[in-house]
Amino acid sequence: MARYTDASCKLCRREGQKLFLKGERCYSNKCAIARRPYAPGQHGSQRKKISEYGLQLREKQKAKRFYGVLEKQFRKYFEMANRMSGITGVNLLQLLETRLDNVVYRLGFGTTRAEARQLVNHGHFEVNGKKVNIPSYLVKVGDVITVREKSRKSPRFKEILDVTGSKVVPNWLEADQENLQGKVVALPTREDIDLDVQEHLIVELYSK
Image (cartoon, rainbow, N blue to C red; front, side, top):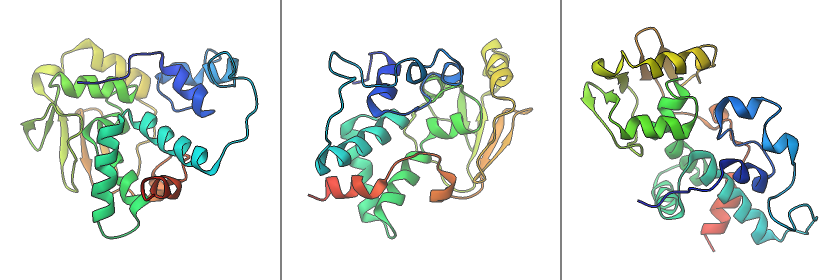
């Protein structure tokens, strides 16, 4: 399976904003954006005029990197969103938000989306009582996400909760960290999604 293996902080620097890919590090003075607020590479610090296409591309890349999705899968999400009723850009973000790895992260059961994805891959979670190890699994309203019984004794989950214990869970989810369980109570609205992206530019890019 294809995956990004280079330094995560380069992605934030390329997009010119924090994508919160490194957990606690993103909130410290070690954050790459704080130390080097320009794009990586030899000419990264030079100012360049960005074309309309360039703006659209940057918004798409930003969304992809925020959720840890590569191009082929991202394009599939766009096609799904385009077939749905409503606003295509909002539908796209809603699909990305309801990925199981993102939901696990939002519930505070992973310090980063990358860690949440790895935990799902390793079979630590159940959805409605059934083991699910597919990070791209799309949850629905009413679904209950639980850390599997045999995984609860893992010291890693205690470490995660020590970091994420004060994390604010979005309104469309309910979290019970004491019982390592969460529930999807609604689909996320655009206001619930804290991604600074102009999704209409993504729609324009793919509609050409």
